[in-house]
Image (cartoon, rainbow, N blue to C red):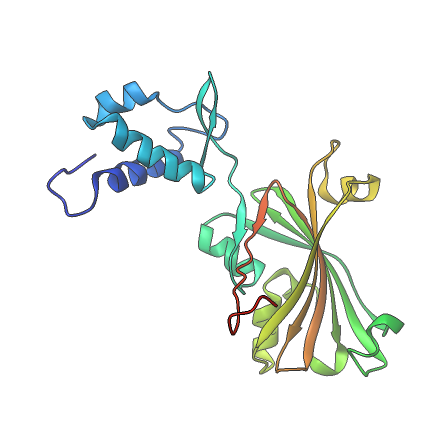
Length: 240
């Protein structure tokens, strides 16, 4: 409940209490939470305080307001803000993650990757990432065999970053291209859906130095379940 003598702002205490109720299943995904009037009576605070707390929860994607109906609990989304592995992101949110390796094999380096990887053979890794029993992402990863020690399918059910760090590599930075893609029958099969859902495609080159690419990854995400936050800044006073 609310401690009005605490140095922590009342709206923030209220916000955290509502989040805890959602986490503990008192209000489930898709359910309407108590009205502003009911919350005011329950917590003994002003409507302005209630609206401030609810407003922040809406901004964070935890709640959604529907005009004339009320405020509802959102289906939680995976949010990537910085350079963390998918496994690290899910672990941070406390949700369940399963990785299914669809394909893992050695292939001849495709022509389009020969400038990036001056090697004859590379690994092709095809995985789906399942969060809370829903397929959220499909990843295609290309990495030179010469960069790797022993790898097997079981290892690839975990974090690729952790595997590569185990081989002594330090990830420096990543360059990404992001675009929307249309749902098709192939994607419906991969994501195990029978309806149209929004998709986001990323093409990432992950570097272990200023110019040396460690691996290339093409990923498809359900953008109704996954948020990719990109921070863009001006350098030397100019847009680049």
